[in-house]
Image (cartoon, rainbow over all chains, first blue to last red; front, side, top):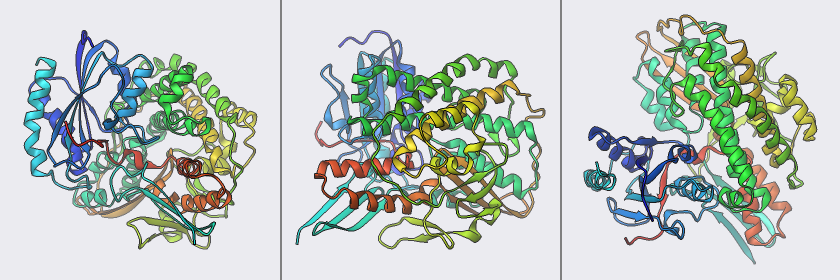
Length: 150
Length: 429
């Protein structure tokens, strides 16, 4: 899949919910390094409007799969479809997975989409970051910078 | 003994936070348990000790879909506590940005989350496959609401331009006029939404709801008003706790709200419509009549039509407010802290959002109490589920589960913005 056009980075999460802040904290690091980042702490369908002309889209979010907290996964979306492990199985909660799939359906998905998922420990309101998650953030930021050539 | 249990974790984006259980024993309904909403206790604790001026920004973080509702309720409460009158121009600008939130939130729910239920699609992605035109229309309509929030609120998400006492900066007339062409388009699009949704097939189900909404003569309720009910209640917002109570439910962390002498009650589009439809714009009234809504709608499945009518209302109201807009000068009135308690209540897209703050003389917050709409509706949703399940026991499991989810979605519950993480089911990479 060709990745011409601009690169865009979207960081998702909720700063008030423990490790759900992981994506946004990676975004803070990227911004400090001069990488433009779109932050999303609300519903993500509005992001689609920002993807016109984008060739490479990198998403950073917290994930929940039962793996050890702090585990980082890199998933490159293929032409065939968005992999099931992105959590598209639930019906209607409109998350980032559904938004990507909708953008694809509408012909507005960037040519290359890479997702960095940081496995969360706790998502409780007001909880501090799990140490293993905190320790993973610099590495994810560096990987994203390499991804977008910044 | 045959026992059927239906559980759905579609709302369970955080374990223990959202869950539904329906237990059927020997062909009859035994129990419905719903836990879909976590009250914002964390935020109430976070607010204690902060300055009153920080409350709008902090409470805006409770919900990514309806930040204006929390900001407006917090501002109203602080202004009441400090004895501040904001004046008409500031109030109308607040009302205008609130219209943007209604458009955005309602359209997201109507087209992306709820409509697929009625049309047999798994979700908006499948709907887009067959009806790309409608999904494109919805996304553009939603964007018109986003733009109102961006221009007035400073940005579309977590608006930063609103403050206790008014705004940091008032947009110019020309900035708002620039939004008019798209809002004119949105008027037609919203009418299309009403016509589309009113043609759906609705389950034959009604409840004898006790409706609760704000009322402000001359306006469809949004940013102010008294709290009224279909059972005859008519009180100022500061009397809320004398008539409404939240009881802790032992089997979950949920709170159930009740109205004294009445029991569970309903807030949101059906309640606003039943208690205020005379205040709709002529265009929205005509659309409601054409959709066959009548003076009172007691079928919760038809809330999707009422939401569409309210979307049309919000577009027309936004156009009216922009037409008569005078930039408030100054954009905010001064707020001098004093030791006092203030209450604020506004109509979030999902229903009334009530706040109370106790303030010290130095402006610090001693106590905060926030009652969001979904927490008030939770007991009513359970009652709806019990009624829907009892009437649908012969449905096969998948259909019954879907019907239950659809029943919950009638309420547009706030759960969707509690967290944003991917649910990964595969552990390896």
